Image 1 (cartoon, one colour):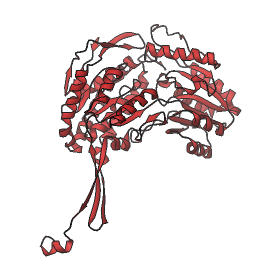
Image 2: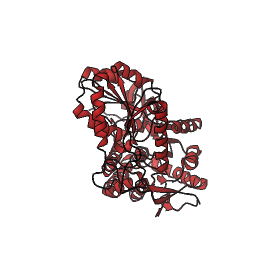
Image 3: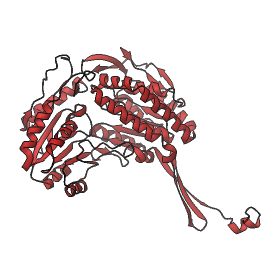
Image 4: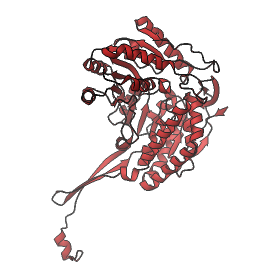
Amino acid sequence: MEKLRNLINGEWVESKTTNYIEVRNPATNEVIALCPDSTPEEVDATVKAAKEAFERWRFTPPPARAKCLFNLRAKVEQAQEDLIRCLVNEHGKTYSDASGEIVRSLEFLEHACAIPELLKGSYSEDVGTRVDTHYIHEPLGPFVFIPPFNFPAMNPLYCGWAVACGNPIILKPNVNCPMTINKIGELAQGCGFPKGVFNILNGSGSKVGNGLVGHPDTVGVTFVGSSAVAEQVYKRATSLGKRAQCQGGANNMALVARDAILEDIIPNLVSSCFGHTSQRCFAVSNILIVEEVYEKAKAMFIEESKKYTLGYGLDKDVMMGPVVSQKALGEILEAVDRAIKDGAKLILDGRNPNVPKYPRGYFLAPTLFEAEPGMEVFDEEIFGPVRCLKKVKDMGEAVSIINQNRYGHTAVIYTENGGWAREFVRRLNIGHVGVNVGTPAPIAFYPCGGRKISMWGDIRGRANDAINFYTDKKVVVSRWHSSFEESKKEGYVKLF
């Protein structure tokens, strides 16, 4: 059994804590690692190392910083098979889902490697008499990263942009899935980063996360998790004068228009609902179907959902793994019970599935309700394979339902009518919209983040938005009193 250590100031050190958190394989319920809940003294030591590394790293030329990231990208690619297996074992992903996550992780690093181009400032000549103005991007200091459990490789590598900008970083892995980012930390050691630039501190959010966010020598935090915790982290960080970029939960909806080609879109829609065991912020939660095609689409959706085979992600032909923990499974099952009591109609019951090879795993098969706005199962995010169908009259009703929900992460329309799609996109108060794409997760060089309670902060994650978040613009206004004519007289300028 692996006992995880912390990466502090370029060295792997065993925590002095007496409290270790079990990391279990959710398919087998076996303990596969022990994660330390690090001490306050270790928080101080990690921040101290990052702070001391800042001056050297910020003045390292951007091409040299990019070279370190190129090295890390190459090492992650070389180690991807090991990382994929680690993702499957600690999270419960299928092999295919884990492989896709590593591909996205590599794309994050690739974009951050373009930092010599991304850090370009702006210059305006002669904005006044002999007055020029320009700005430069300057790094700020140690940033804290608190990623969720659902993408243990990809979300932590938001840090690539912060490091590229010249900031040291401190990663606090999620205690459910800390192993993958610890492996990436091992890869980072041989990439040329100076000591103290790339740090990993394991532990709980209440203890280590709060300690890092509130530490006087950290300058900002990137957080991804539930909306309730995102709000807490955002308010704590900003009350201390720090930058905070806190992405919250989602309750995403899809509209199936009457002209949608059901034979083509239903497999995509079901995958969008149940891929990654529904444990992703872009997963569709509620499917709104116009009344003309409701019964047909409902029947096809149920039949497609029944095809999902459950099991251990490294086994052949497994389409869906377990949820991440026994606690998570218990909370999801309680939500199903409450939905039934609230009057939602259970039309596909995935509870107590038969997974003979893994009887101790945390499995729940696709579960489907017919539900209405105002019911908890429809209005709130259930981070697992429980989804809702609702019949709607037209797009106007669908848009109203989507906009009234307090989440604002993602919405999707399936249609062959360009005018309907355009109207749908423009009328929504939503951060991401998909057109015939059930999971419209943006590529690395586009920003990512929702609206309403799905996002706390005014600068989104990734891409050029990340550059603006991890740096501050310093504006320089300059005037030189000597003129061109005076320079000629002094002999400094000769005309051809």
